[in-house]
Amino acid sequence: MSLSLSATSRRLDAFAGRWTMYRLTVVLLLVMTAWSFALSVAGQLFYTPAELAATAATAVVSSLVASRVMGLLFRTRPQTDSSLITGLLLFFLFWPSTEGGQLLTVALAAGAATASKYLLVWRGRHIFNPAAFGAALLAVTGLNSAVWWVAAPLILVVVLPAAALILYRNRLLPMAGVFLLASGTIITARFLSGGEPLTTALATLFASYPVLFFAGFMLSEPLTLPPRHIQRLLEAAVVGVLFAVPLNLGPVYMSPELALLAGNLLAFALAPRAGIRLRLRDNRALTPTARELVFEPLRPLKFRPGQYVELSLPHASPDARGARRIFSLTTAPEKPETVAVGLRVSEPSSSFKATLMKLKPGSVVTGTSVAGDFLLPRRPGVPVLLIASGIGITPFMSQLRSLAARGQIGRGTNGSDIVLVYAASSTEELAYAAELHGMGIRVLACTPTDPQISGWTWLGPGLPDAQALGRAVPDAARRAAYISGSPSAVAEARAAVRGAGVRTVKTDAFLGY
Image (cartoon, rainbow, N blue to C red; front, side, top):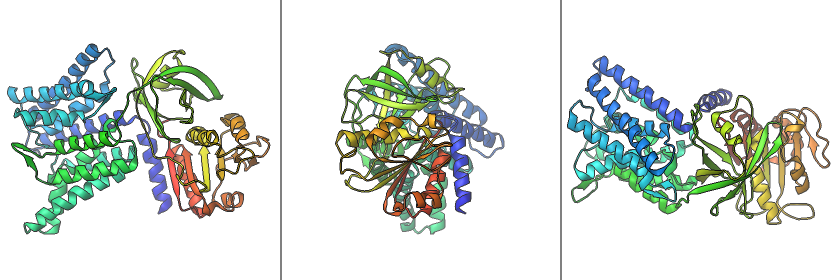
């Protein structure tokens, strides 16, 4: 059973990793749109194909046009995927119609949603979910109200797998679970108190309330999420309660979109975001297929060792991987004058990486967020086992450089108890080898040939299995394990450390890298 689940996980990672989260969201929303048209043609949906087509076209075209106008006003390149997502989300929120006045309000919602990305910002980061803001603005002004018609039993057939894939891809299943538990418990309790059987209450919850669509496509919007896992769970709980409890403030009644906006405010209060602007200082080779880009932050960049930064690089004709990518930071926060990211560069390269590699020193790149929970234990002295495959070494470099900057590792110190298992396709692909050797930590190299580095132990090619790991690290069971690399390498290493008796395991899978 575990092998089957692992194989399924690898297939899902391989499929989802072909696209960025934005492009995958567009694809899935288009699939849902096509399914709604199929249901309409078959007479299984209340709305006619003409009504669906008119509303979808209005929402999407209005979003694209508004994005282009705002891009010209603010002298930025608009993000097509973002505009498509906003338009398609609004399509599923407002009552489908061919009536001119109704379509005009949909267009206004799309324009307000797009404008919020540029006007309701803090240091370059928008605060509210755009689609939720557009819908809420129309409701508050009395122009129109979102009906969330996507909450229909037959549409649930595609909403459920689509939402699950988005949440799995973005590693947000726990957050969605908290939201569903909070909102579902309250809604179900309300039905039960009214005399409804439990089965009827649950069926109504999932078939008539947009909980799955909301969790998968609205709550998961990445640019408005707080950076830490525990903060996201708290936001999900608060939004779940507001989603389910019928509150009102005068003529304004609580709605899914208002619940999400309240959650966005909470997320912003928990971790206010600062705009990220980085000036390229150096682009240096790490290995024949990997490079490290060193930047000078135009304002201080706050992060913790092991976190990642999402870079935005608008460029002509972006491919399916889009204009935003996530990279692990490799530098220590104790040395804030520069920050760096490490990345693999191979052919054929994505349009993003091709553009990034062409940047000259002095070029400025913007970032959208710093986030991640791939953090070493706060309590000093906890023995750790680090397992890196290929470019998966990058988050560990930030952690190790931070420990070195604080004098907690290095030759002649009594610092952290660290064992690093480092796998690469060849000795030439061992990035940062000289620096790691200088740190004096214990390294177990997994390469086809012995790297012959003094103090290192060679384990042979490939990641070790549970037995080999147990022999090389006899005290593995008392260590906290951290694994970083491709999804397949992470799955393989996780099985090995579990087999070696390790109980605490954190992973950082590089999707689509």
